Image (cartoon, rainbow, N blue to C red; front, side, top):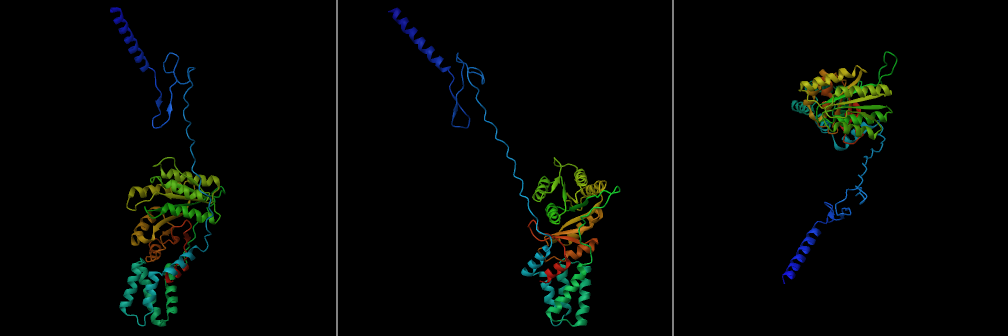
Length: 390
C-alpha cells in the first residue's frame, strides 16, 4: 500500500514538471500595430536563435521607401509685356473710376461755385494726390474753365485729361534699366536691381513677377534671395524663378547674412554673363534703424562686385500718405531710383502715383494690376489717365 502511494506521488511530480517545461517553450509574437505574426526561430535546445544564424533565417527588415522628389514646376511662357496696361484701362472703364467720375461730374455743371471747387479739392485729396499737386491742378482747371467756358462733356473730359497728364508727368524716364555697364577690362556687367520695401507690400511676389517681365523680353535673369529672415521667402522666390527657368541664389540656412547672399547672386550673374540680377530683400519697417542699416550694408557689399542699376521701392497703392513716409526714408538710405505700385487696380487712391513721384523725384516705373502672375506692367501715364476717366 505504501509502495502504491509513493508511485502515485511520483507520477504527480512528473506531470507537474512536464507542464512547467511546456511553459518555457517560446510562443509566436505579434508584430506591434499589425494583425499578422512573425514566428521567432529557435535552436535545437529550445533557445531563441539570433537572426541570421544557421538555426533559422534572419527576419528581413522592410526596405525603406524611396524618397519621392517633388515635381519641378512646369516651365511657363510669360505673357508679352506690350498691352498689359491696356487691361488696366479697360478694367477701369468697365467698373468706373471713383476719382475720374467725380471730377467729370463736378466740372460738367453749368455754373461752378466755390462749393464745387471745394468738392473737387476734397476729391483730389481723398485720392491721395497730395496738397501741392491738387492745388496746382485746380488752379490750371479754374483758369481754363473761365477762359474757355467749357461745359460740353467731351470738352470737359479732354481738358481734365490734359491737366491730369501734366501732373502725372509723361516726360519722366520710366524704363527699368536692364543693360549693365561695361567694366574697366571691357567685361559686360549685369544690371543689378535691388528691390526694397516694408512688410506686406508684396515685395517677393513683385520680384517674381518682374522676373517674368524680363524673361518675356528675352532677358537672362538670376534671382538673389537675400530675405533670410522670413523662412518661406527663399522657397517662394525659387518657385517663381523655376516656373520660367530662372536660377535662384539662396542660403542653406535661415538667418544667414543677407549681404553675403546678395553678393553671391551678383557674382554668379557676373560669372554667367547674365543680363539682370534681381535681389530680393527682407521687408523692413522704415522706423527700425538697425534694419535700415542692414539695407545700407547690402548696398555697399553689392557694389563691390557691380554697380546698382536700379533700386526699386515696392509700395502698396492703398496705404496712401503713409506710403510717402516709407518712400522718404528708403530714398535716403537706399537711393531709390523707381517705384513699383502694387494693388493699383483699385483706383479710389490713384493719386498716390502723383504724390510719391513728387515726394521722391523719381518715377513710378511698374504697377501691379491684380493677383495673376503676369499682372505687373510698365507704367504708362496716358493709359493710366484714360483708365481714371473711363
